[in-house]
Length: 468
Image (tube, rainbow, N blue to C red; front, top):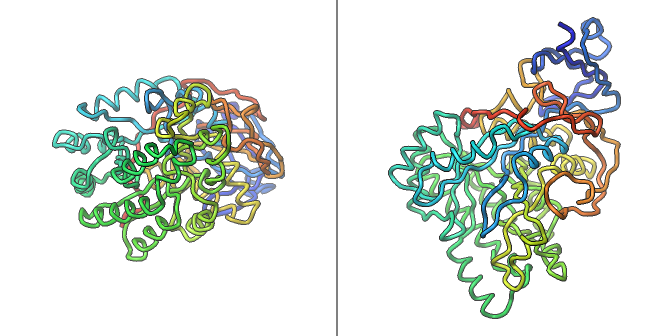
């Protein structure tokens, strides 16, 4: 039997709960056992393959709960396919993504979901699940929500932004929340006041303010905070839990803190771009700022402290990427002379685990909190734990051997995302993924890709594991 086994020896195993010097035995795609390094138990183990993790971390594969592969947006679509995007994720130590299937206005949820199943089928290098974007809340789509929850699509995203595209009004949001309160689904909210933002966009363009930096100026902090507050109150009226995506501003964090202090089931996610980038990037000359156009937008640097604090106090629980790449040439350039036509989104699925390790090096987070916000909590939030997000007997053998001492420079020259720039070009970080296993299969082997399209399996999810 030893030929189907893999043994990882000598590393520091880090989970959200523990740090232990342990050897890890993998069998049939799952974690079979852990035992103290050098113990009689582990010395007796035999395996067809042994990986030496001396002086390395052994961590669970990352769970990125917010990606947009092949997303249609503004007349173009995200440049990463499920094949290129999941391969890049693996390179960055992420072994599960949850992407967003999109319902089009006037169409059934099922139609949108089936389109995304088809896009991803036999293409993914790592395991994947889906959330459902609701663009058209009506009697029939509300009924369909119940069926999707039964099928393992247990979260639904609504937008208070993008009128005419994804936008839902307060009545639609309330109805969807009421439905989720009874069917166990979790509502994910893009919280920005899109109606007010559109007025400010129109005014800015009329006054000749067309550069990328005005994207950040019209999408005001107060309009994120107001929408966050409103979403929380609607969720309270509906008696439903709420997960606010890509929180970027101190005032929005304050709304989450106030709700959580009342004991409400309100959760918040932020993204590396809000922790490491700022409006300074949006203001880069020669239209370079277009590379950093995403929504919610990058904020002035002083907001970062509140986001780090929220991650430490657990008022923000998850760091996802909102990976939605558009090439600078030919895609971001659609907005030259009109910032409102710049496709919204940044590449990042490959960088998240490294950037968050850098946050450990910088003293913002502990090692266990790194694993908690990047692996364990997203798995629990979206009904994948303990199959994903931890290293424990019975869990899927999604394991990363991580070298905490290696130094690297992030760059479009060396990344594997299908996009012509890096949002972190030239940034030096300490720590690098060395080897990655997905369900026991080595997909990155000492900085070489050995995986394949189609290895990744669709993974149905349970409901949120944090609900009171």
